[in-house]
Length: 618
Image (cartoon, rainbow, N blue to C red; front, side, top):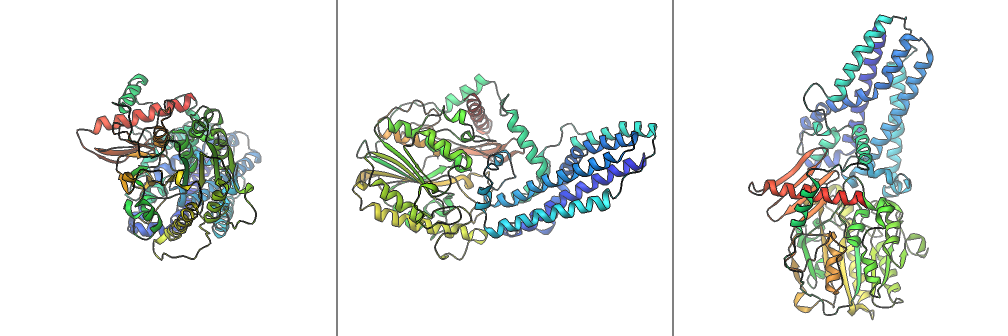
C-alpha cells in the first residue's frame, strides 16, 4: 500500500513542477513585457504561490486515471498498468505543452489565455505560422520539443523509473480506495471552503500579465471549452428573469424621437470603408495618442467627422465583421461568424444597399478563411470578394499577403470599372504581425510595440497615397469614406485587454459628400462599431428596423452606451461610469458613482443576457 501511495504522491509532485516549468517559460519569454510594467521581483515570484491551489486542482484532475490504474495494479499485478500510466502521462504532457506553447504564440496579440475560439483556427494552422515571424515559430517549436522531451525523460527516470512490484494486500487496496478519492476531491475543489476554487483564485496583481501567468493553462483552456458546450443548452449569462432582462434592454434602447441630422449633401453616395487592421486609438494624436505615428490620418480628420469615443465590439477581426456589417455585437466565448446556421439569419448592410442598386465588393490582401470571415462575407451579400488568390502575382507581398499600398491601389483601379453607386470595403493587413511592410523603420520608440507603431506609420502613409490617387478619379466627389479599425491592439501604454482604453478605436467619416458645415467636426458621444449600419442607412433614408442592436449616431435622441465582450463577460460604459465583469474572474474594473452602481451593473448584465439569448436562438 505504501508503494502505491508513494507513486501517486510522486506523480502529484511531478505535475506541480511541470506546471511551474511552463509558467517559468512564459515569464521568461515575455520578460520584456513584464519589465515594462516594472513589478518587483518578489511580485513576479508571488505568482507561483498564488498559482498553487489551481495547480493542485489541475493535478488532482489529472491523477484520477492514475488512481484507478494503481488501484487495479494493487489487485492484479500486471505491467500493462505501468505501460498505460506512462502512455497516458506522455499524452497529457504533449497536450498541455501544446496549449502553453500556443499561448506563447498568441499572448502578444490576444492578451488572454488560450480559449475556445482558438479551436476555430486549428483547422487553418498556417494562420498561426503566418502570424508569427519565422524565428518566433522556430523558437516555439524548439520550446515545445524541449519541454516535452525533458518532461517525459524526467517522468520515466525519476517518477516512474521501473514497474511497481506490489504485493497483493486487499486491506491496503481498500484503504487506498477510500482515502485517495477524498484527497483528490479536496484537491479538485480547492479545499473545504464553502465556494469551490475558480480561476480568480490565481489573480493577485495589478499587472494582468502576472495574473494570467498564474492561471493554470490546462485548467483555463479545458473550462473554456466546457463553458462553450454548455451554452448549447442554457444561457451561461442568465442573471435575471428573461422578461425582466428584456425590459431593461428595452428601456436602454428607448428612442424618444426617430429623427436624424443629415450630414451628407447627397442621398445616394458611393460608400467606401477602409477597415484598418488592429488600429488602436493610441495611434491617433487627436484621440489621446502620441504625436507622429499617424500624421496623415490627422490631416484627414481636419476635414472629416471624427468620432472620439468609439469602441470595438470585440477583439478579433471576425467579431468586427458581424458588428460593422450586421450590427450584431460581439459575444463572449464564441463569435457568431463561426456558426453558419446563425450567420444566415443576421441582417446585412451589404444586402440592404444591394436592394437600392449598390454594387458591393470586399478586398483583402490575405486569406479570408480564418475565423469564418470568408463564409460570412459571402453570406452577407458582397457581389465581389477578392482575397490573396484573386490578386495578381506581380503585387509585392509579405508573409500574410499583399502589402497595404498595393492592395489600396488595386481597389482604386477596380472601382473605376464598377457602376455607381457602389459599396466597397478594403481591409488592410500590414498592421498585423509579423509587420514585414516594405518600409524602413521611422519611429525609434515604443518598446515592445515598436514594430507595431512603425507598421501603423506605414499604413498611414498608404492612406495619404490612397486619397491622393482616389481624388483623381471621377467617382471621388460622390463618395463617402469611412475609416475604422476592426479592433484594437496592445499599444505602448499596455492597457489591460479588458479595459475600455484598450478597446478604444478610431472612426472617421471623410469625403466631399459631407456637408461643409460638418467637416472638421468631432462627435464625442459613446459609440460602437455596431452603430454603423443604422447610422449609414438613416443618412440614405432607408429602413433600419431589422438592425435592432444598432443605433443612429446622428440622432440626438439615441441612447448613449457602449457594450463590448470581455472574453467571458461584459464591458459596459455610460456617461456616468463603466464596469468590466468576467464570469471567470468577477469584476475586473469599475468606475461607477454609488447612486448609479446597481442600475448600471444590471443594465450591462441584462444586455449581455438578452444578446446571448438571441445568439443562441439564431
